[in-house]
Image (cartoon, rainbow, N blue to C red):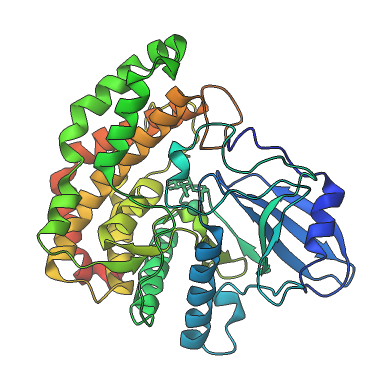
Length: 402
Ligand code: GN1
Ligand code: MG
């Protein structure tokens, strides 16, 4: 599904972009292929304005209307917190011709997928969006493009990791006083690792898993079984009273924009999964994306290991940005690193076995390779668990030293 979704023709993209008040007629659309889920284009207008146009993947986000309400609430709140300047420090939605910052295109008799509460993940291929009549059906939005920034696939220095982690901590802090109600859960049970294992079980039980892929992934299926005992660790900690906060839920280093001139971590992007959750979810995603030097898309898991210098920068940057954490939350952070890395391995493995229906792939074995990288990282995190706990415990003291 995600990977096989039909792409709109370039002129359709431009016509869609023209419905947003970017300023000047859109003349160029450059597709970005870095995200796994949504379709993203950098749009340039005749007046030289640039915007980020995105089509929301409705097979993953079953209720785009409520998702966009979340995004509007978050961007409005951050604008209030940061003040009228600081436009490079926050995302700004661009209104469409409807007056709202999104449009829904439905062509012909085809209706868009009806909002429901089910997870996109369980949708079968072919469900979701119906006839893609003009290739551009679906929910679209546009953000102002933040100029003169760089993004990172992997961390390049401890100082950079410190800044990124601090930015995610500040992001959580700014959302701590978001007026009620809590944000809508755009993907239910998103970081419920136990239910991620159950999804794997279902794929393994189904004949449709495909004998060939099942054989290819034997070692990884075994690794998942070996580490399954970790899956409910955060769920149990949450039941013991860890606070629910508004968290980002996809804290990859690639979701931070760095200033091109001075390397400052300017802005956290990708707000689609910001919703109630645990601080440990975000710390865990940061650890799996910033505390080592390997690309998540590396073909070979050889040499994948946690880098304690980067992990130290991560812990001190995050603890500096998120000063509101309770002692119990600080205790849970290393668990977050272990559980989120395991969860991501299981998600990639499930998708590989299911036939690459969720994460966009460029090559057939990519999801299995991604899974191997996560398992290699998990082994390394487990080997160094005592060090990681010591580093987090010392983190606050060393926050100023990076
Ligand atoms: C997906 O689309 P992207 O790249 O922002 C995924 C995250 C995973 C990540 C792995 C909605 O994010 O949960 O951690 O890939 N997002 C969703 O790179 O499933
Ligand atoms: Mg994301």
